[in-house]
Image (tube, rainbow, N blue to C red):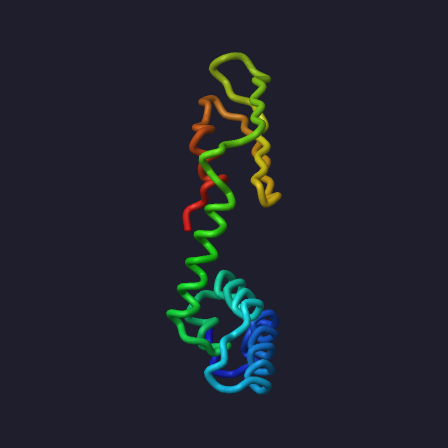
Length: 137
């Protein structure tokens, strides 16, 4: 994505860029950027990438990268994958040898996934659940 011109930016990223510009106009150079602005920058980096976000706002790439990584680690800690699901129901609706089931998953953040399966061979439900509750970064 070309971020050389402000009008080329997606609207959410442009909004954060403007918030940073306004804050910079009202504060001395080398002042600490408030956590609320950093949080907005992290959200933009998750949507538009580190490089694009750091250039658009502008902020130092490695400072933004560090905050994105911290946010990711915090989310993993909050999720507490060792606790496991609080409720899992698997009810077979077809004879053994065929698989016809619905799987509904919900994580601690309220994200939901429903999968309707109709196959001759049973899928690896454990791997499916793990990929939902512990997504790769």
